[in-house]
Length: 164
Image (cartoon, rainbow, N blue to C red):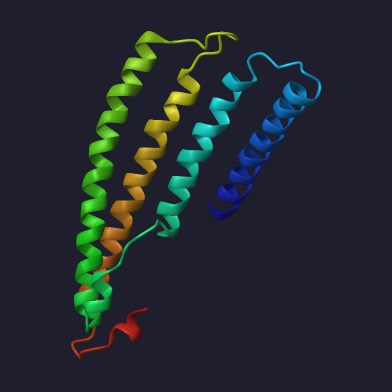
């Protein structure tokens, strides 16, 4: 799984960098803008964004403001705060997944095409649903893992440093 994300995300960001460099070179150096390149760049951009978010969910490395951890004295209280945060993340992810499902059905029904190249936009728009389903799955996995850890914690009070 880690290799998949490593190579896929590297390929997507490299592709975008090359395409953007080519566009800038052609437009500003040779004064020959490439028509439709901006439309094509939407596809790897959306997939990069959502697969990067899925990877952050998988690794549990999203940006967090763990302010309450400063005030928590025991590993148990710190873990309870993490469980509450995971629960809120799961609720929000499922809510957004529901919206993405409705949008996916709409995109499938309408089957829009890009303005210049007439490429179906569905292939970029399905990144919303796939990404949010995977993020919801990882949020549920982290929640269940932390709940299991809560029940296996020793009863002896531990400091916050021992949990980290």
